[in-house]
Each structure stands twice: as structure tokens, then as C-alpha cells.
Length: 347
Picture (cartoon, rainbow, N blue to C red):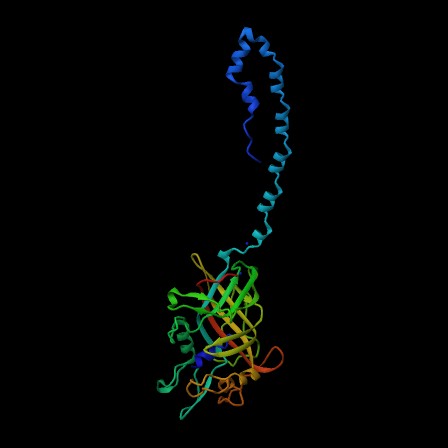
């Protein structure tokens, strides 16, 4: 249920020389016998033979301009340096990642449950097993196909072009909701034409840098435990991009969303660990997005009902923040890990 919510927080490049026919004539054994034949002395001085030796057609063959043009054929040179070939990306460096672990750290989700009252469902479920925690529901949606449609229920993808963990490297990344087949161990991912990934740039930290790639913005967290984990080097961080994610039929519009993660270079692949997703949802948009009717307790209510600080929410804590444009809302922080997956997409 609320697990669907949480996902909202989410929100890469000379011709062959032909045998000389006259040379063969000059060394022809039959000609040599003619030269030694006394009766054929005139043959040895036969001007026709001399003309053979200096046959002008042979000279023209040697300097045939068409041969020269063959050796320096500009079309061959252009083939060797074909700019379009050089610009083609290296497929081995274009990798797709799927988030394999996703944990909401801030803000927490509060639900006003009948009889029980206002409870924090982020990390712990409701008493007596009435409802699982939000983070356990997110985990299930990443690993399971609960609706039996052949796809895992939640697949956040990052398409990297080009993947290069070396310090200072840059590239492009496309981020968003995708479709990945079940089971998770052999998943194959794709992107729906009507729900494309959103493209932005990314950059790795500089060599020997000890600075984090991304951390919570000052004053935008509520001192929950465990806290939001910052992203340590060696790492990358994307530029901001507005994302609209469709999770379980709920549209989450996130402003200035960024993704960062630490590289974990293994034997033949590179994983993302210690990752962080940061994005802002305005109070106005949260009040306009309605939760699915089939969600227990909160079905049909606006999203802001379960966020602390909303006028319609049950939490006494005000966790609202100021957004990039000065409007009020919530900065969402989700820690994650991601792994390379097979896919059928092209850049």
C-alpha cells in the first residue's frame, strides 16, 4: 500500500602490383636461345625486340595515374577516419542499472488508523500485524510480481552512457520507471514508449577527493533514526531533472531530482552501493495526487494526508521544507543499491 507511495520519493564510439609482362619476355628462355643462335644474330639486334624492352605502353603502365589514385584513394582514407564511426558509443560502456534495494529515510509516513490512532509506518508495521511497514512493502514490490503480470512490481532504472568509474569522468544518464520481467534473478528490462526515462548529465568525483557526491540539504531532514546516508567517494552524482514516476497507478511529480551512488568495482562489472535519491514534491502537488481507492484506511485520500506537516495529516511533526522555487513541500531522501541488468534498449 503505502509502499507505492514511497517509491514516490524517487522521485551512456596501394593496389597489388601486376606482374611485368616485358620483364618476363626479356628473361624468356626461348629468347636466350635465340641470342646464342649464330644464324639468329640479326634477331639479337632486332629493333622490334628493343622496342619491346622500351615499350612505351609499359612506361605508361608504371605511371598510370589511375594506379596512383588507387593507392591514395581518398574514399579509403575517409573510411578509416569515418567520423560517424568514431561518434558511435561503445555498447559495452552503456549499461542499465535497476535499483535492487530502496529505503525511505525522510520524511516518514504517518497514518491515522482507526482505534490505534496516528502511527509511523515507515520502518515498523502496525501493531498486531494490521499493516506492514512502508519499507518492507517497497522491498516486496522490487523483488516480487504480486499482480502476476509477468513483471516485477517496481523497477527504477538508470541507463548510463558511458559508464566509467574513473575520477572526473562524465556522461549521460536516463532515470525513471521501467518494466523488468520476473523473476528478479533473470530479469530483462525495457522502457515503455509512453513512459520514457528522463535524461540528464552526471559527473564523477575528482581524483583523491574526499568530498561526498551528495548529502541531505541543510535543514531538510527531521533527525530520524537511521539517518539519511550521504554518498561517499568514489562516486557520481547526476544533475537535477524533473521526474514523473507512475508507481502503482499513482503519479509522483518530483522536482530537481538527483541520483548519486558509490561505485563498487568487481570482477567484470560495476555495482552501485551507498546510493541516494533526492527530490522535491510540492505541497500543492501532494494535495492534488489521490491515493488508489483500494488502499486500506487512506484509499481515495490525497498524498499529503500521510506526510508530516500537512494540514490534513495526523502527525504533530512539521517536516515541510522549502523547495527550489520557494514553495513549501517535502524533500524526499531514499538510500539505494543498484545492479547491472540485461535489457533490450538502445541509446
